[in-house]
Amino acid sequence: MNKRGCSGQVLLVGVLVIALLLLSTELYVYDLGKALDEGNQNSFTDFILAVEAGSKHVVIGSLTNVSQGGTSQTLGNNLERWSSFVGSRYQFGKCILNFTLMEVTPYSSGVWIFWGTGGLGVLGAYANFTLQVLDRGTDVNLKYAINTTTTILIQGTYKQMQGSSKQVNVTCNLLNEGKPALAENLTLYYKNLDDWLTPGPQNNYTITDYGNGTYFISFVADISSSTIEVSVHASDQRHIHVQANTTCPEI
Image 1 (cartoon, rainbow, N blue to C red):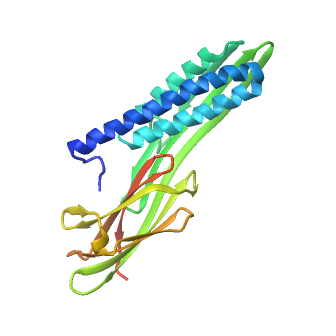
Image 2 (cartoon, rainbow, N blue to C red; image 1 turned 180 degrees about the horizontal axis):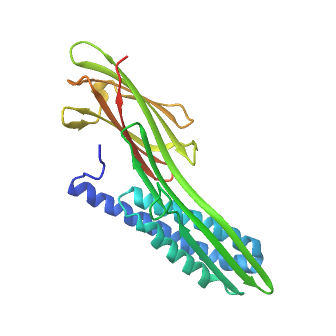
Image 3 (cartoon, helix red, strand yellow; image 1 turned 180 degrees about the vertical axis):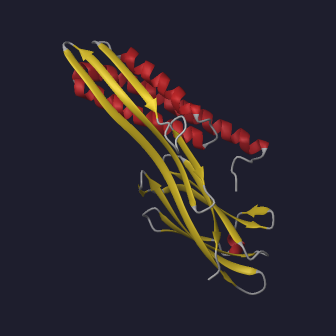
């Protein structure tokens, strides 16, 4: 199921969400700028740590934007602005922040998007940074990389009941950088003929959260086909959206 095939109303809501996310990033950058000034007065090390933390925030914010319908170029555009901002905030010497976006497959413009039909969905961003700071005789050259990835893994089975009624069970695992992560929200769709439907209380729909990034979803529905396709859409607590489809075999 393709989330981008939405109605005009849903697209409008998506645009508003993106605008709020961008506003959030702008406010963070403004606050961080003040912290950078204070860091210059207090600790050279604090300044460098603040730049690293800010770089990570911009990458995550950009990936959130992409997952909500933004283009892959969002990452590069935001990092250009961030690099310029960092250089302009340093007042006790010279500061240059450069970055390169990963262009090795599966990344393009630093972004990896994969909505799989085999139970795997991935959204990731990868950028390498070089920070050079010249301050009162101190020459610092720091290299660091930021790799942010949200992954969803799903697998399911179904059991034939009376008539065309089927009980479907789906297990989902959500990961951040390969480690278990909690979902902000989780929605399952199943296909019946040409329609994608969301099960509700009338389908005995339940979600069990094991608290470790694993979710178990169960429902009962009248599905005429012997092939059961499901699609799970999830957002992690960073508001990064991922989705994956799979076909559930009968047990």
